[in-house]
Length: 61
Image (tube, rainbow, N blue to C red; front, side):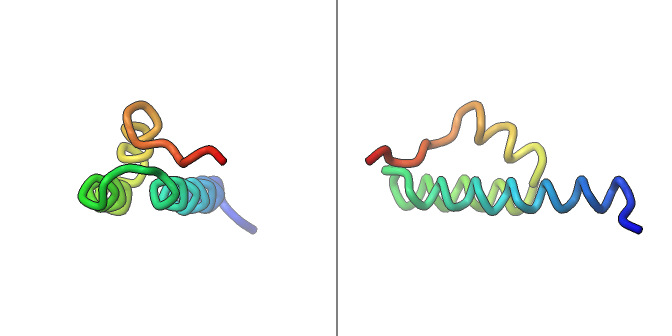
């Protein structure tokens, strides 16, 4: 049986992977991309919140 913490961790992992993909697709500079990815990897929940509010967006085709 999966616990609530396990489900939350899985959702957080999926959100982190999605955010990193969006960062790679953005038009931000390489340094900016590295900064955001490191922030998300070191502080997953807080990093995602900060990225969602202020981070680079994926390019629109």
